[in-house]
Image 1 (cartoon, rainbow, N blue to C red):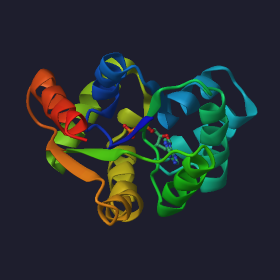
Image 2 (cartoon, rainbow, N blue to C red):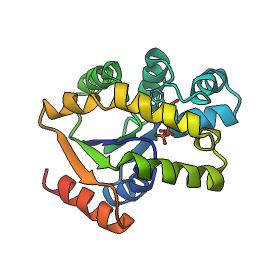
Image 3 (cartoon, helix red, strand yellow):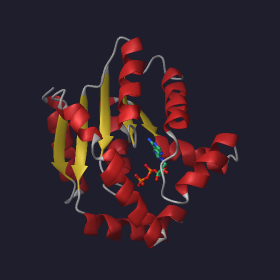
Length: 190
Ligand code: ADP
């Protein structure tokens, strides 16, 4: 299996690059943010719970997120591999993911990180807020909170993969196609 973690702060371009990568490598895309938003739209219990955290720029609790992600992985027994987008966002999520993949005799192949500086992230998120109507992209205080949470809780996850020699960073500023080609080069050299 080819299992990729697409990593980076809010607004780094993970969704855009995931869409291109799943097509090139025939992978299943699991975006925890997208799954939560689908649940919010469907007014499920999970959606209601997730919304209360997402609206404030906080993380949905680990236990909830891990259970939801595990269920999604198990829905795809024939997958050639996965792109995990927006997951893992905490060290607890990273070890839970390892355990899950281990139980399937698989593992993470690579963590690909999109590196984008903070000022550019804020600029992109405000534009996305106008275009998509996503509530968490419209309020500068919520955007700042998400970046702060990323720096405090999510950024350290990089060390987890670096320690296993699985971390590759790519410049996330530039043409979408140029960034995509750099990601493909990393994957193809596995
Ligand atoms: P972005 O990375 O642009 O902020 P996402 O769509 O990935 O957007 O996530 C939106 C929100 O969903 C996050 O701010 C958080 O509240 C929640 N969320 C997504 N993934 C996770 C996760 N792995 N753990 C906890 N909360 C999550």
